[in-house]
Amino acid sequence: MQKFTIIQTATLHTGTLELSAAQHKGREHALKRVGKDRYEIISPVQFKVGEVISYEGDLPKALANVMIDEAAAKKEATKKEKAQRAKAEVAAAEKAHLLETLESEIKALGDELSQADGMEASLEIEARLDAKVAEFEAAKG
Image (cartoon, rainbow, N blue to C red; front, top):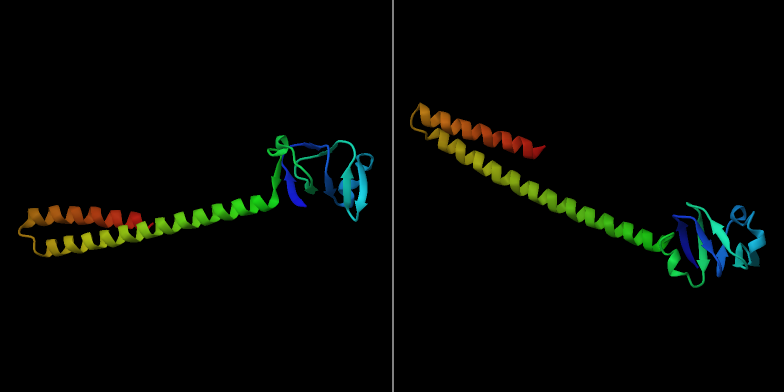
């Protein structure tokens, strides 16, 4: 049996279900008991949004957009989580590279400042150094 979560009102016409006692109550007229908590659908039975059922049988394609296969949903969620982690790792590596580059540029500007000839050259280098330090701080977050 496949486990499904109902995401839109769904009506099933055939197949076998595994339901809780609460889900069975009120639907007795449409179901025939075939085992413990297992029922064969004998007339159309409806399920509301949020209900979780186990279903065995040929699932009509029309119901594919109203029921989510729990196993497939978990697999998809895991896939998305992995993709997000990979994206975060790439972003972290890019940030580390950027910070390393900025540190190198700041050091080079510091060296250039220590060898600057004249006040005007020093002021120009200091302005570039201040901008680079601000860029570094912003990138660091």
